[in-house]
Length: 435
Image 1 (cartoon, helix red, strand yellow):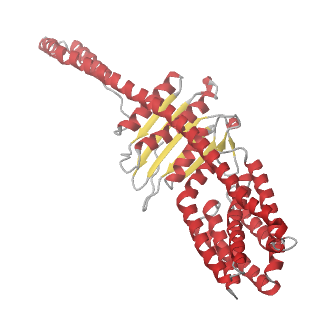
Image 2: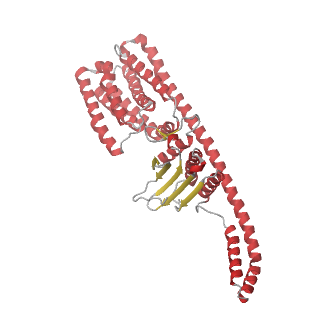
Image 3: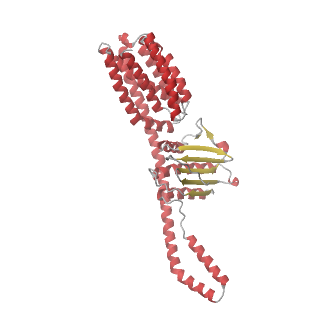
């Protein structure tokens, strides 16, 4: 095995690693790793044997059949998303790898087919690409996969054409270095490919950020409204308490008179009346965290105004959250979705929302609402989806938050109740809501 063969082996291994960073497997991490090691490791060994047996030129012609298609079907079986998103991700990972292989081939050819230079260039460029993918591309790309629901078929089709054209032009009927008349066109293609993909990525990413910012602004406005309502209620409660403190002496005098005269019934009436006045001055607080409490207060009030019965059981301190604002935004999206689900239910059948957040070893947030079962449609990953344009952003925002915090999300629809549960990671233990 010479330097060229080693460079091919290095390239195949790194293309596999790049794709594993961009796609999402439907299996747990350890199982995915074992399957990749067995299946893709075997496929790489098989292709390296073909390189040694048939030669690099032959492999350049039939690489799509011996490696691309088998790996495509394998990862299609492994993938969480079996649609245009998967095909686009598969193509972009392979094209990035083949782009490096093509560029290094041309540089090596320019220096008299120096295979040691070829190996060193591929080691450096693939390591550089992996650093870029892991630290700069992976997170925003997964965000795009979560938020962008339409258009993947078109992107996948265009990527497939790019992939096919690139593969055929570089190795069919002979290597591009043996067709000098076509070399300028091939160099132009090498320039066009990164420009096209960078443009697509930036457009999608900026659209995601715009949608997220607009949504977060609306939720922050609702939080501000919640804070204002809480402040107004506290001011009203303070005024009522001032009056109670002022009138307390008169109540005590009157109560003393009733007791001295033996009028127990009148004394009880005074006590009940005073108790009602005290209860009327109490401000309801759902949570000790002011940001989360403001969100709960706002949406509980909104649901109550719409005739929806709300029950909130919030005992978690939420002091271990990285950001209580982000948690509030997630909770606001879930509450908003629950309200919309309740409004589809006939009023006479009852509309109800139950919110629970408990924390023992792990933090668990759960929200349940009455809902029409026919109105809920799940996708292939059991995630509720909306068929209306412009809808479903809240659900995608929740999923992005869950993914960012390595939490586990579960949706259920049973007996007219839609349930959302989010379990946040911890070292050990679980918690179960009492709702």
